[in-house]
Length: 480
Image (cartoon, rainbow, N blue to C red; front, side, top):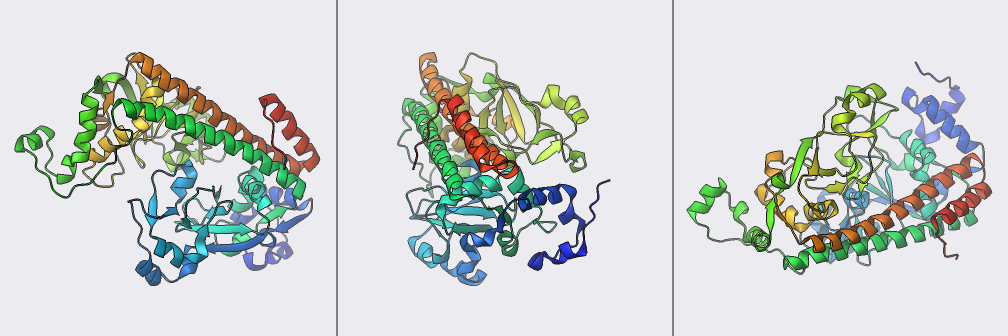
């Protein structure tokens, strides 16, 4: 059993955060607070110029009358957690320019910190500069700092073990969990120097450069695929009316109009013009496994859920399972090098090729695919992530927003099979893209560890360590 002995004076000293619940005083939280307070520190509000959210623009009724959220492309992007979590700005929601101007208190320009209010409360993102008007979404806080040189450092801090604990301690509620403005303002921040902040900022500039190169290479590979099918500049059009034969409905065993949208026919016809096959004839598949919430532990092996996964791979899992349970499940449900992970629940069709064996277990929301014919795995993963399969999945849903895709339906996805030479050309670009993405992640890991080192040891040691690690990677930073 864990327990903490806390003086009443310490409880009373929490000011607006008067908390007497045991959760707030877990031994781990107390230790982290001690490590922060061992050196000069300040509360986060000292650094904040603006802390606001979507509802600062007006009441629910007023917002409803002035803001319409759209799926079709419009003048302004409304940022959502899913965009920031996956660093993906293709699956977007939009608002009009009039709505954007009405939401004047929550315009985004890049460089702001975005903090989730609910869902994954306290999870912190750094808003990229997208070169277009952007507005803050719902259920998020916008934080603009007095000195934006610190944005990169504070983003790193809030994603380090110290910063995560400082935030986690202040999360309240049951369902849903949440964090409020007062708690954000009272977060403890080490009094980092400007010099160290700029060092981390320069590191992030290099990280961004690697990310941009990775995205560019991926786009080149995707364009090669779409060019082969004549779909590079293809724009889907939703038609209100069209004619189909009764025999088509019998063959498909479907009568809903959405299934027969002409845009889906256009995709299928392009695939049929070249060599193709059903996914079920290309891969062997197996499902992940479900475990009960009572089997989660504080420390152990990662249990991978949809929220821990995107097309770039597996991020740090929020749930853990015991060593014994992992040993029991690993042979069947642990991702191995060469496996292709495909999501059948939640956000359907997210796909990633595993590059090395993982000491983790995948949930039942995943299908694990393994090619059984001679096809480039990188190429197959690209096809599954592309509009080619996204539209087929959309067709299967009948226009509804589905949260589940049957494995039997997934195996009906029609996959274009390009020549081995073309597949190889595409795969090489994807491999180069992954290398740049890997380097970007390495730079982020260096930044996180350096921030932790600055807290536990000194900024000088942390800065020297950064330079040593960059030298190993053959990376040179541009100095400001």
